[in-house]
Length: 528
Image (cartoon, rainbow, N blue to C red; front, side, top):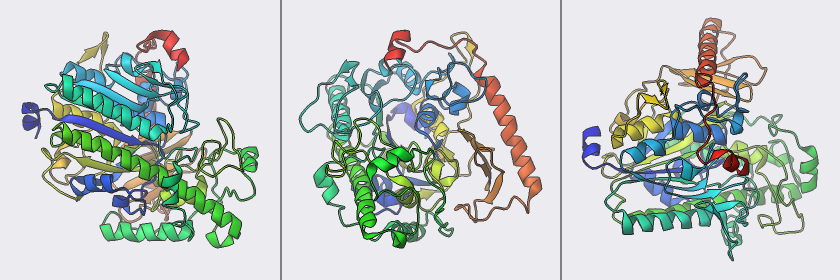
C-alpha cells in the first residue's frame, strides 16, 4: 500500500468531533441521524477499539505530534516546565504533522478548534479558521479568526456551519490554484461540546425522541451495538452516585429545579424534570445532526473537485461525552428557548452515560467511557474493504505514523539540534487491508490523576488517589468485574509498567530544557 501511495500520494482529511459519545453516531448504534458519517463507515472501516486521551487538548496533541501529550508537555505532569496542561509548550523536537507534510509537498488547511500551543499559520498551515477564546456561544463569532483576522458577526451565524464554510472556501481555492498538489485538511468541529446550542429547526427533529429517558436509550444503543458486532459484553449499570467531574453547585442552581446532577433511574424524575432532560438530549442530538450535515457538504466538495477517491478520511472524537455541568459565557436565561443563544446548558451525567454506551464513566476519566472513540477510516482508492470492522486496539498517537507511511513524508533524525525521540504511535496502514493484530506492547493514559494502562486484553485503571482496578477487556469491556483481588500478580506487573512509562515520560518531556517558542512569538501566545 505504501508504494502505491507514494506513486499518487493521498489527500488527508482528519475530522474531529468534540465531546462526542461512543454510540452517538448511527453507525455506532445511535439513533441520531448521521447519514454522511454512516456512509463513510459503510464505504470504509470502523475501528471498534479506538482510543483518545479523555480530554480535548491532549487528544489534539496526540493526533498532531504522534506522541502522548505528556511527552510533549501538553498535559500536566509534576516537574514539567511551561505550565503543563493546556498551557504547555512543545519541545523543539515535536513539530506538528503539518510541518512534515509541507516538506513532502502538501498544502495544509485548518478549520475549527485548535487548542495546541502556537498558532496554525505559524505551524505550516496555509489557511486557518480558528475558533479561539473558548467556545461559550455557538451563535457568536467573538474570538474566531480567519487567517488571523477577526471575523465579523454575520446574520444567522452558527459556528458548526461557519467551520464547514471555511473548509469549503479553502478546498475551492485549492481546486482552483493548487490542484497539482495534495492537501492535508484538519477539520475540527466543536460540536457537541457544551453549551448545548443548535438551530431551532434541528432541535425540532428530536423534540420527542428522548421522552423515554436515558435508561431506555442506553439499552437500545447497546442492543444495536451487539447486533452490529461492535461489542459483545453486557451493558454496565449506570453509576447513580457518579456526578460531574467538577462540582459547581451554584451553577446548577442557576439552571433551575429541573436540572439533575446524577444519572438516577429515569422513573425517579418528576414529569417536569423528564421533559427538561429530554429537551437537553434533543439539543445534543441536533448538534451532532448539524455537524453531519456540514460534513456532507465538505464531502460533496471533495467529489466536485475530483479528490474524493484519493482522500484518506479519518473521523474521531477527542474524548467521551461530558458529564460536566457549569454556566459560562453570557450566562443562562431560564426564560429563553432551550438551545438558543442566551441559554447555557450541559449534557450532564445521565445523558452522558447514555451517550457513552456501552461503557462506564465520561470525559476526564480514563475508564472506557472517557477514552473510547468511534473511529472511521474511508479511502476508496486505498481501502478495498467496504463496511468492515477492525478490532485492533488503536490510539490517536497512531494517526501521524499512518499518515507518514501513506504519504511518504519523513521525520528528520534531528530537529533544531535535538535528536527526535522514537514516538509511541504505530502505523495502522496494514489494518486498512485486513484486521491485523496491534503492534503496541501497551497503551498508556494519565489525566488529572486518573490513570490506566492496557496490555493485550488486560487493563489496569484507577481514579485519582484510588486503588488499581483490573479488567479483562476481552470478556468485560464494560469494566463491571474488577479482577484486581484475584490477580495481584497481574496488577503488580501492569502497575510497574505504568510507573516505568511515567518516569520515562517525565525524562522525555524535560529532554529539551528550554521551551520552544511557539511560531508567532510570545505576543501571539498571550493573545491565545
